[in-house]
Image 1 (cartoon, rainbow, N blue to C red):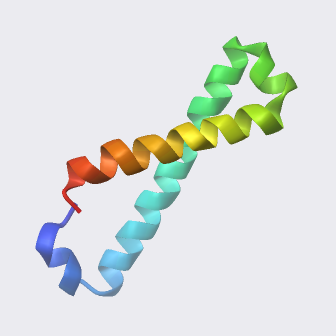
Image 2 (cartoon, one colour):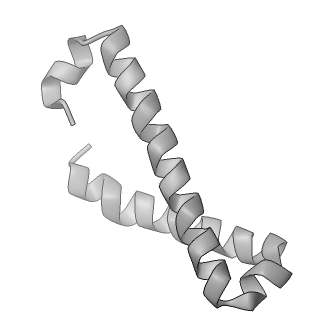
Length: 71
């Protein structure tokens, strides 16, 4: 978010990163909960469905988000 300035921002940059990480975690969890309200199988078989959802999130983050961020 901050670009090159992020390397020199110190604690403020680390705090922003922590807040953004928590926000993404809450949003990803909310997407799963929202989907589970419409697809009963996600609630009944939550360990397997959660693992599959986690793999999808991993793939999206690594193959879409990171390349688009030019990190």
